[in-house]
Length: 87
Image (cartoon, rainbow, N blue to C red):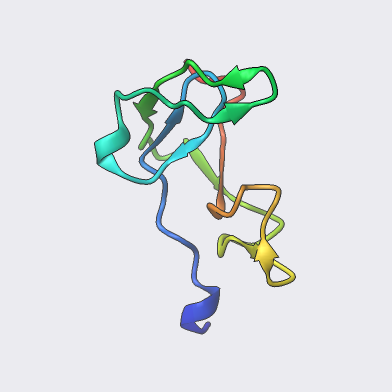
């Protein structure tokens, strides 16, 4: 397996409202403000590092790209939140 096909690092958390992925510790506990159709998200980022919290994206196989474009399934993160709803 080449370095280009290795999965991206596991996310550190996600927004409790919209599910946007957090890749940096600095955003955990802070507001999300992800642009949504009805305005900016009002959720906050929560840590989520449990063993079963994340699934490798089946579309891009964890590298964030699908046909050389940012993967729409995982928004380029390479991972999907495995829980049906954020607690």
